[in-house]
Amino acid sequence: MVPDTEPNIFQAPDLKEPSAEKFRSFLRRPIFWVSFAAAGALLIVVLSVLPLMTRQAGPAARSIQSKINLRQMGLALQNYHGTFGVFPAGTVSAPELPVEQRFSWILPLMPFTDPPLRTEVRAEAGWQSAEHAGLINTSQIIYRNPEQRLERPFRSGGDYVAIAGIGADAAELPENHPRTGVFGYDRRSTLESITDGLANTLMITTLVQPNRSMFAGGRETVRGFSHQPYLNGPDGIGAVAGTNAVQILLADGSVRSLALTTDAQLIEALATKAGGDRVPDSAEW
Image 1 (cartoon, rainbow, N blue to C red):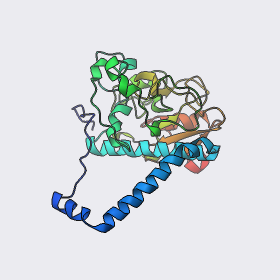
Image 2 (image 1 turned 90 degrees about the vertical axis):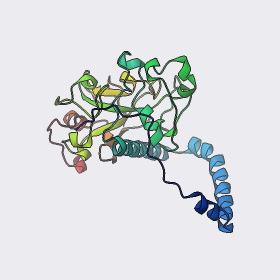
Image 3 (image 1 turned 30 degrees about the vertical axis):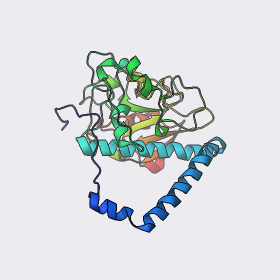
Image 4 (image 1 turned 45 degrees about the horizontal axis):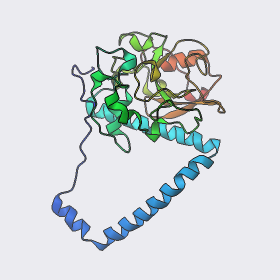
């Protein structure tokens, strides 16, 4: 059952911290400072070579990193669900705003990602408000597909989209509609509502082109499959230029790749969460 109350989107589980005395005792140990210095030196080396590694990474490495991004999103979604008993809606609640002006589902996930981002916004002001300029000009690596080479309108431009189901109106469908997917503009799903099976239900896919901002609500970050071809077609869901596989996150947290030639009926079955469609064994995809 979906909770009646709206979750506090800035709430995240508190980390358990050791008592002050235990912590001070730990700091007095020489091994702590030796380990701390070694870890710091290693971190400096990693940070210095990471940009070079990213630039020189081959297609296979970039594809692997995109899959890692999706796994991290899946973990954040599961942690959010574990805290609130529900997945976030496709847009942050602001009924007076059109969905395109609202914040997207990515904002409530920020406290659950690594590194976490805790920030206060006025949801009713919309994501493009001047007061949110600092947030919109930030980026978080897990929402940027390293395979993507196109320009982004904002530094917060993202390369992934949440799946709403089947049809141009999928994000606006009621909870019990057979074409409904996990995400909707004002729809919050639970694990129990995904009756087609967690391993058979799409949550997030890659985009052919970057969206305006990962914080932008509406079609920028939530889409249904409305027209064939479903992949690299008019919906903009698919593989970026120079690649031939679409990376997908399933509701069980697993990450798979779909060929651009994947059968339309399979995509329709994966896009809905309770449509009752038969999904072939994943070995047949």
